[in-house]
Amino acid sequence: MVSKAEFEGRTVVVTGAGGGLGSAILALMAERGARIVGCDQSAEALASPHIASRHVFNLLDRASIEAAIPALLDKDGVPDILINNAGWTRAETLKALTADRIEQELDLNLTGVMTFADPVIKAMAARGSGSIVFISSVNAISHFGNPAYAAAKAGINAYAKSIAVELGRNGLRANVVCPGSIRTAAWDHRLAKDPEILGRLQRLYPLGRIVNASEVAEAVAFLASDRASGITGAVLPVDAGLTAGYLPFIDDILGT
Image (cartoon, rainbow, N blue to C red; front, side, top):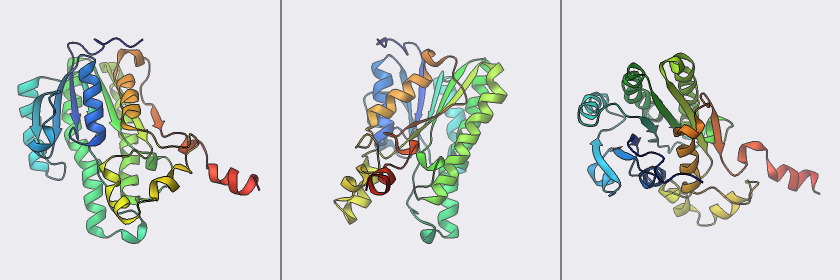
């Protein structure tokens, strides 16, 4: 049984707090007693009543990130937990890539994330404690399209491991959750083109469905919590079995 006061007295920073997954993460952690510091690129995205303190910046704008960090630390103190959730992609195949799209997706999903996280993590290390969870993707483990995004997320996995190894003796843990497909607004542009796409997608997953945001949030909360006190540098897929193997091969080739 998970305590309803598991995060009582702890400050949790969540980036991308206004998105589908960010909203699920902050709601779960607030329910378990956390004080939530929400970060997103607009004030409108931070309307959740679960958010105690709000900071607006854009991961594509280095100046806004660098201004947000001291403002956050001055107002809210060094966080106990940092959830790096913000991310975005639209260049879905190699054919869709251009130099501008490569730059945008790497800057948003890797460079911007590290630019924000690095000074916060170093402040946590100076204090001597902290838990960091990065939201990566199954795209960082195997190729499912979105090549620039996948490269950025693979970089996030490596960055988390560097924190785990170099700052473990400073009391920090860093772990990664790699979700499979989640039915959030990120799928809206695909559904607009093909309303039947989710049905075909589910066939790829051994559980016969995609995961929901609350399932991913549970994994994030576990890794962030003291229940995972001996876990650091881990990369945890929450993907309904997608990265375990390719089920259609079994069905279509071996099952014939």
